[in-house]
Image 1 (cartoon, rainbow, N blue to C red):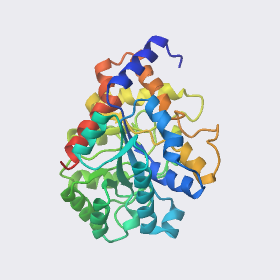
Image 2 (tube, one colour; image 1 turned 180 degrees about the vertical axis):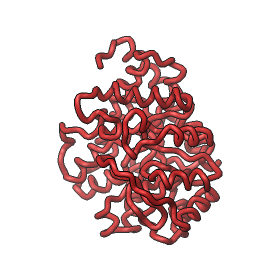
Image 3 (cartoon, one colour; image 1 turned 90 degrees about the vertical axis):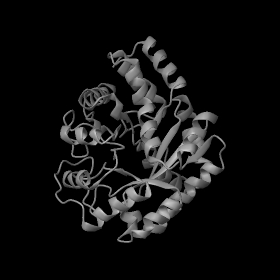
Image 4 (tube, rainbow, N blue to C red; image 1 turned 120 degrees about the horizontal axis):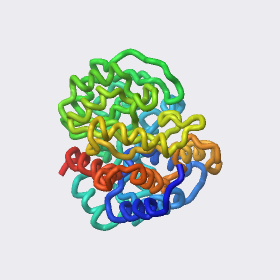
Length: 346
């Protein structure tokens, strides 16, 4: 997609003068790998420049564990991810941790990049729901029940590169976990949950839940994306859709233009559930994959966008395709800020 300079400049202006949020990034997991690789200051080295270039004000960092990490490290591994991320934030005056609405407002007022912590799957807690309270005390403010796999709480959907319908909803313990999370004030993420699990969450949950990094299944068929009726119910509760940037979820595996496909998801969702329920949650994975292997980021990308700097190009593409600036302003960050202000403790 060839972008005109006037829309790139308009996008830059929007990002420089309005809040920008990325609602999903595997930052904690990546930092652990990079620290183990002996790298110094990886948060600043790999992220500060790109986040600043895109005007990003808030990043929602997941605590994500692979199957192998869960087997070898379990709950202690999740705690270590939290520790490494928090130490990196404390060591860098350009960043600050966000646990409350006051923290969020302070990050915006001071120009520091806020980092909000949540669990991408609660596999590590096993059957011990008391660990939810331990995680809360450590600063975790949300969670998804599972990451594309079965655990004691729920069944996950298929992995992003697969197209398999996986049945099975929440367990009785999973239903209890939803109630406990809502009572504590944790937000609930349904990305990676299967369709049966979504139905159970919709039945049990009393507060707005969100999909931090899922797209439209109508635009691109993948069980990691949501159906129209699911998106409508999520929005009716005051929830949010975060645009995933993984190629196989976006649908740009072949000759499809990445910007074109990303725009199609945003435009379809905005038309279906209104622009107020759509935002960015890119799930940049190439950098995590590079950290795992101890290599530089490969030119062979799994991400539709290379890094946070290229968010500007997506915003420009939406503007060039005719989306009103007022809508785009909400989508790049204002919508997620409003959601987190509703969900975070005061």
